[in-house]
Image (cartoon, rainbow, N blue to C red; front, side, top):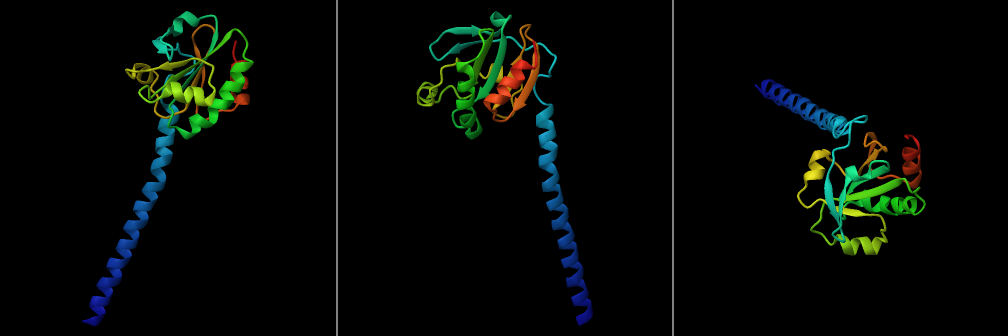
Length: 178
């Protein structure tokens, strides 16, 4: 009798260990799948950038299609995002020496935060656009921030970077397309 009980306990223990290991394996695999999905999301390179009109912090309307003939860095960010905060000084450093045929547009995803105060504190001089209705974030299929699109002079998306960038990343991407 004792051997039967011991055998049952041992069997249950082995089954429990197998279940726990199977669950742990699924937990490890899931982020890899979601990272692949993230990389595949959004507007594809070689496609026309969706047009939009948004207002700056000062209330001036900016329409993307009005910028044809200029290369555009379209950056999606939020004030609460640590990688966004990290890349802002890099974008600002790039903006100070950007050629006249380039434009940086930073689309803020939390327009009800104190974006103006944040902008002053960070010393941002490039245009910040407020996506108050979340329409542009939706049309560009933004799933993580920061996300940056590089748009050529004809309005075609040439590259997309998800994550914080450096001044060198910006320079390299802007020089890689006409």
